[in-house]
Length: 166
Image (cartoon, rainbow, N blue to C red; front, side):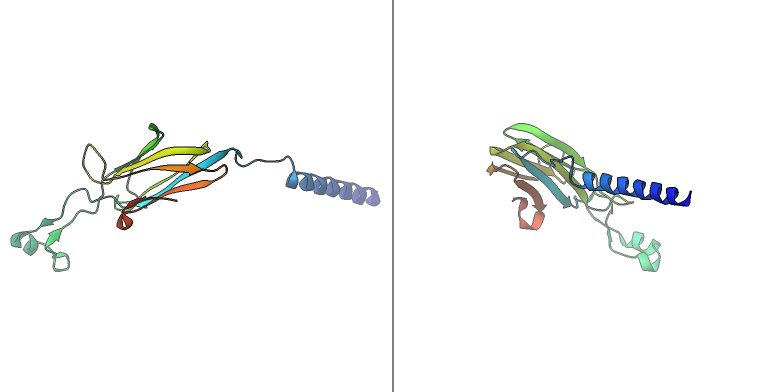
């Protein structure tokens, strides 16, 4: 009886090993269509404060505890930004950029992937990071040639002039 148990256990282990071996290489999985290119938007940007700093009066400063006596009253909270992307003159993506953090004082983040047909495309990226209601604070347009299976990244650095296409 003991020999049969060992034989059954060995058979089950063998079946498990065969199943693992099969699924490690099959069925074939294609991660990405080889005829497409991929546009990735990956940006992190702190939007502007919700309002400008205000200079406190001498009376206001005197009322504050000694460790809080600063001449400027600056808000922590930041505005909700807006990002939009156009491909060949048609809207591809539009999203609000809410600030992160418990007090809404952190950087806003956007990460999104777009599979598109390879070839020549006109890209326009726009971002509003202020409290204005219309228009955008940053904008960049370019005609790009996307090869099949290419990863094209749209990044943002305010001190480098705005959007970076690579």
